[in-house]
Length: 146
View 1 (cartoon, helix red, strand yellow):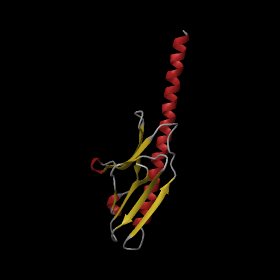
View 2 (cartoon, rainbow, N blue to C red):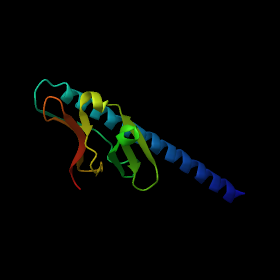
View 3 (cartoon, one colour):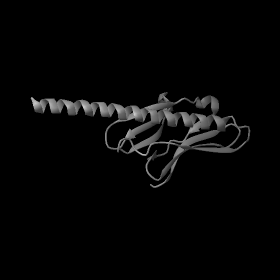
View 4 (tube, one colour):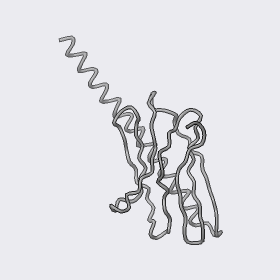
């Protein structure tokens, strides 16, 4: 009986911990998506022919001792637009948040190359660049430890 109670407690606490981490990942992916939209709109509505903007994000280095990644994903060919994926490296816990940009109206694309790994000594930067009057691109990169 004692073993069954202990096992039940472990299973329940593990489920609650996973749910908390998923909520934290969701907040992170929404924060990144919001910042990409803000930078992209600032670049898009800039009256100059060419402009570059960056914003350093304030992200946790880890989630309760677990490393995580952030990745921008292009689902436009499936009609789902661009998304931010945030996932733990150690467990199969992940979330997605849409990047609400109408790229056909704004002539804006999102650079979806690679993953970034927030952590000690790393800085995560959202950037936007306007190459001419009608076209712009935005993305995310990391500086520091690799």
